[in-house]
Each structure stands twice: as C-alpha cells, then as structure tokens.
Length: 433
View 1 (tube, rainbow, N blue to C red):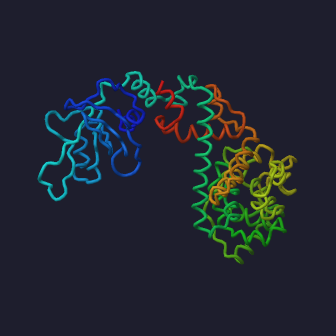
View 2 (tube, helix red, strand yellow):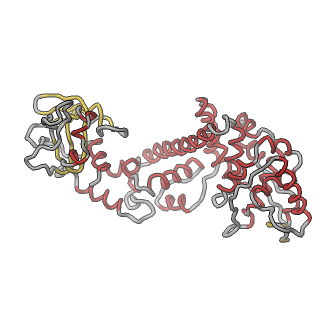
View 3 (cartoon, one colour):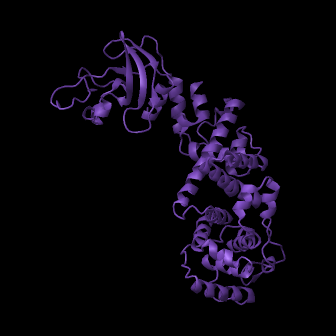
C-alpha cells in the first residue's frame, strides 16, 4: 500500500461501505469524500461526513498507519484543526489516541481526538493485486495484459487530454523563454526550429548555436547564403581545423570575420556524427537550415496567417546548396544526391515545432483560433512511427495521424514510464473494473 493508492481508493470510494464505522464504533456515512488537495495541508478538502448522528463538513487526512499523524507532527500544525476524519489503511494506535488536533496556546493540554476509519479489510484484493502487478511490471507498459479491455470511447477521450497536456507542457517551455528575450516570438521560434533540425542527438547543440546568433544578425545576412551558412556552421564548431576544399575555406574566412565583427561567443557544445544516417549529419541539417533562413522572411508571422498546411510544407521544402550534393562532410567527396529536407522531416518539424509553437502562441494570447489551427494541422499529418507507437499498435491502439502518435508518446513517457497509473485514464478504468 502507498499513500497515493490510498488517496485513489478514498477519492473514488473503492471500498466496501457496508456497516462503515470508526475504530471507536461510531457509524460513518461518506456523503462527499472531498476534493483532492495537491497543495499543503490535509489530503482532501470540503468533505462531508456523517459520524454517528452528526454531519460534519471539513477536511480529511489519510495515512498508511494511524501513528503517521504524530510522525508528521500534525498535532503541532493548526492547518489540521479542521480535519473531521482520519482515514488509515491500518490502525496501529492500540488504546492510545494518536490523531490529536493542535490546541493554540495550550500545547501541554491534549487536543480533540480525530475519529479514525480503517480501510485495510474493506478493499478488493483483486484491485490490490492488479496494482502491485503494475508496479512490479517490467513490460512495455504496466497494464499490458489488460489494456485490451479499455473501450474506444475511453481511449479517444483520454488521448485528447494527453495531446492537450503535451502541448501545454511545451507551451510552458516557450513561455519561460519569453521572459528571457523580451517576448520576441520570432526569435524563440528560431531557437525551437533549430533544435528540431538537430534531431534528438544534436538538439541541445543546435539550440545553443541558435541562441548564440542574434536573429537581427541573421536578418542582415539572409540574402547571402554562404554567410548564413558560415555563421551557423561556425558557431556549431564545424569550421575548425584545416580544409582542402575551396568551399569550407571560404566559409571559414567569412566566419572568422563576422565572429569578430559581432563578437560571437562559442557555445562549447559538441555536435555528433556517430550512429547517424549521413542524411542526418549536422553539416547537412545546418546547410538546410541556412537555406531556410535564406529563403524565408518573418517565418512565424507567415505561419500564423497560413490557412493551409500545404503552404507550410512548401516553405520548409528546402535543399542544401550545390556543394552538399556531393558531400556529407567537408573534404569528403560522395556520390551525387540532392540534400532535400524530405517529406518525413518536414512532417516532423510541423509536429514538434510548428504546431506546438502556434498552440503556445494562441494559449498565451488566449486566441483559440491559433490553437484550433494547430490541432487541425496535427490531425492532417500522418502518424509517427517509432518503437513507442509500434508497441502500442501491437496492443491494439490506433495510430492513424499525428494526434494519435503524439498522445501515445505522452502516455508512454509521462505516465507509463513513471508508473503514474492512478492518474491515467486507462489505468483508472482498469482498476475500477
């Protein structure tokens, strides 16, 4: 038994309420268990309990054992003076009263004893066994063996909530950035976009690179592609050393000049090439990002006004300059291949940057049009396919569009991996049944 499970059992009244009585023998009727409190103070507020012939309104405190009341020093805390019932899993107090209220200015005198309700023998053994199995599970998800019992209506409503939770969580990150750059949305979009271009391996390094170059500097040089590329590659630490090809030598000279002119500071972040497909090498992604800067103006402003996802995809349909058609790294010639960004990467950028950023903008300004547009775009994009979405599909979960895949990622990473089963819509239904 854990306190969180005990909270769950009390909140949803998953115990036998027949002939309910306190440890002193007074009858108990739960008229309302109270609102779950995640802040300081008793666990449930605004409860309504009938004890004996008296109806009480107040708070309820829960513990695994009765003696935990004294261990937590609630008898010295006036916030617990309004507790009307002490709900415990196991009453270990014996004949000695332990749940005592604090008495102001009379610390040496005993306070009022709080009625105690024990639940140990009133909870379904099946519920306890199922929860224990989940907590000890090493499977893909804790409820893997029973998830097939969850109906489609439950799945759909829970996935909708998961998506909003995911978008709001990302919105909080963006809102935190706003406090550091005087609410410059275009600049923050540049940071997040660069992070996305870095993929998972180089995300931090690409974001650090983006933050190290003021957006006003990029705007000044956007018409000269090789200058933009020099700034990005240089700040990412990829123009260090000696080169034999003319192109990297030119970029290196450009970078040294503008680094001194704008007093750019190195990021001290390392970019990685290992265990990557050549098309995802940081050199290629930065060259494509430079081309995007070169070809676009006030990109986020355009995205805000866009009505069609087709337009978004066209704006991101960029190809690195000619040098990279024959290279993946400097001074290493490869067979010809145009380094286009590709439909899959464009979808990834819309899913992970464009839609969340637009949603965050709408949320911050309380403009639902932008939030609805972001959700509509996610609905029109194909689902992501990775080991998490494939794992859920094996268990029967649908993965049709980006809304589905983003919801499943949120479920796995924020609930299943940390075993927050008691807060999960799926877990709730399975424990309830």
